[in-house]
Length: 162
Ligand code: FEO
Image (cartoon, rainbow, N blue to C red; front, side, top):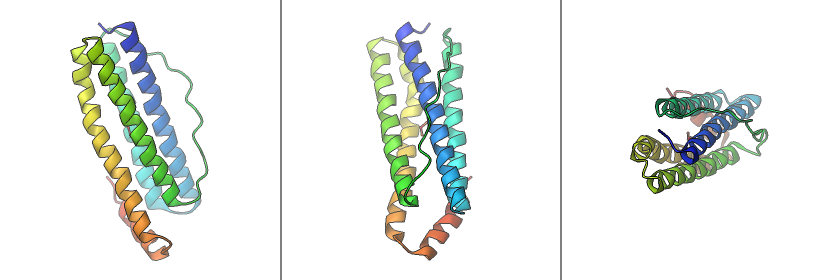
């Protein structure tokens, strides 16, 4: 059985994961608006992954006898100055999510809820990958700078994400 405090914190994380999905879908929409289909494809897949993260926590909460209460999802930003600005925001966002996951792990330890601590390990590992993926694109966009050719090449590459 989950403690009330842990249940509420996991519910908040469901909201944060759904916000992440919303944020990445908004980034996809920005890329579609400037005809960078590959970048948009990458973001749409990312949004889908975030929804899966929310479902994973949802399933866990019920498995442990808790309840899911869905709250309103904040409106994400809709405009960016450049593809680099988008990915810098995505990277910053993932760092914030990592901090949230770490706080959940700390809470689970405080509560001596070792099952939840164990469940969260998957997210701890996932965050390493999430930060690295966003940062990799940031670094490449910095190398490409204002080169249109470079940007189109990257668009083709990101469009291959599976
Ligand atoms: Fe669900 Fe990108 O963290």
